[in-house]
Image: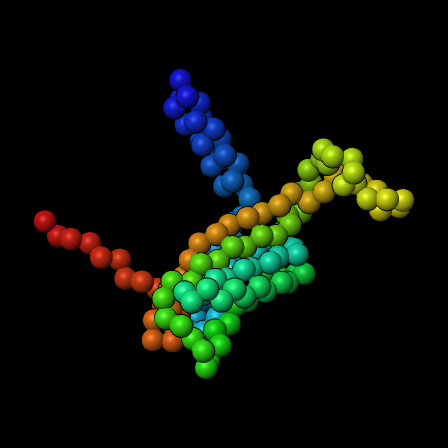
Length: 135
């Protein structure tokens, strides 16, 4: 029963997610950013390098861009988290968070969140090769 409910929930969330354009990660040799950046604002991109250094990039509009620092590039897997506000509005459940005076609202921007990783090898961002075995 739970599995059926989970399958239905997954199918519905996938169908509704398809209607909204999802940002797509892009990179060149020394920069990481997102394309298909519609209806998102106030974005924060947090990147953790393999040695534990945390870099935070904020963009009020448009995509935040992470740049590798030329002198201190560490090879390995870099993990990222991207959060932003969408144009879609959701009802504020807790009235304490609705602002004051003229700024009082009963809705707020629905948040967007994604996470992932990219790889740096020999000082540049790469696309790892997909390896498959032939039988």
